[in-house]
Length: 90
Image 1 (tube, rainbow, N blue to C red):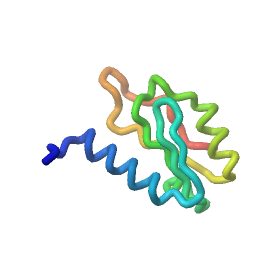
Image 2: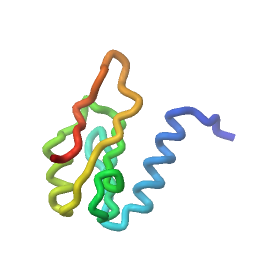
Image 3: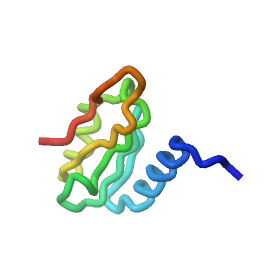
């Protein structure tokens, strides 16, 4: 049996979001994107795997193409960082 670690739980969470993303899903460098199509950013989210790889303009363009508000889950923050490069749409 696979050990249950924080990384395993985050991967499973991302898998579930992508499976339920009826409006679309995509993988970009450093982030997995999922959208339900609902007009609430908490239901259209990027699951960040590597903040140093994210092209936030590409993430924004993907969500803008769907016409939905969005956000990113950047927890836990990478070692040595107090924040992230991911910010919700305005």
